[in-house]
Structure formats: C-alpha cells, structure tokens
Amino acid sequence: MSKPGIDFPGVGVGLAILRDGKLLLCRRLKAPEAGFWNIVGGKVDHLEPAAVAARREAEEETGLTIGAIEFVTTTEQIIEADGQHWISLLYKTTDIQGEPQLTEPDKLSAIAWFDLDALPEPLSAFTRALLPLLR
Image 1 (cartoon, rainbow, N blue to C red):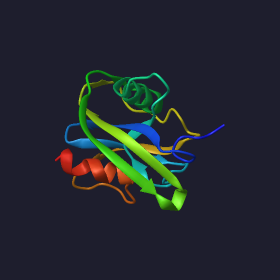
Image 2 (image 1 turned 30 degrees about the horizontal axis):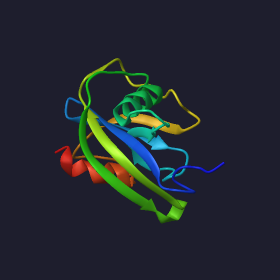
Image 3 (image 1 turned 180 degrees about the horizontal axis):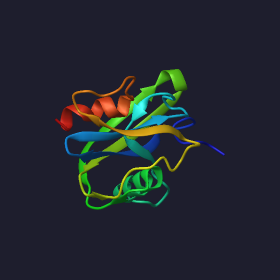
Image 4 (image 1 turned 45 degrees about the vertical axis):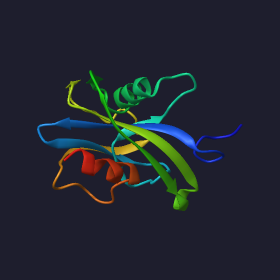
C-alpha cells in the first residue's frame, strides 16, 4: 500500500493553538522532522474536510476541546532528509477548553506552551512557515 508524503505528496493540516500570547508546541518522535517542535496536526483522511481533520488531530494530540478555527495559509514542504513531501493547510485558534496533555506518547515526547518571542529549537518547517502570520 502506498503512503502519503512518501510515495506521493501527502495532504496534511496543522493547527496553531494560541493562549495568552503563547503557542502550544509538541516535540515529534517520528518523521517528518523527528525531534523538532511542531504545531499539532497530521494527515487528512480520505473524504475528510481539512478543517475537520485539523480539529480532530489537535484534539487527539492534546486532549483539548477545540472550538472555532480560522484558516491561515497553505504551505508545501519537501523534507529531503526524511524523503517526505507534504502540502498542508494551516489553521489557528484561541477557542479551546481544557489543559493540554501528552495523549500520544508514541508520536510525541513533549507538549508545552511557548512565548512567540521565545520558541524552542529546532522548529519544524510547518511551524516556521506559519509564524510570520501569527505575529
């Protein structure tokens, strides 16, 4: 079976979750960009609207309840080091309930809030592409 992002360009989503001037980031355990800090997100499933996928992925990865989200931009990332190619729709929200938790320890090693002016390194390509549009 073919794999999105590896055998053909994958369609992904990312959601910037903001609270009190801070951005929620997760540290990835798996490619693409294992070890990098990233906004929450993942792949869009067949017949799933991208905004629904963004909310689903965010809720799965953080345990938060996500309300309204807003489309921000589209990005294309070719990550040669991992042999992956993704086209992603990126969203943002401040409409959340709950406290984030590390709910997928097989995919993520850490989750934390960071001030937009003091973000950790290394940052994923997806997060870097979105940052100028969050400030």
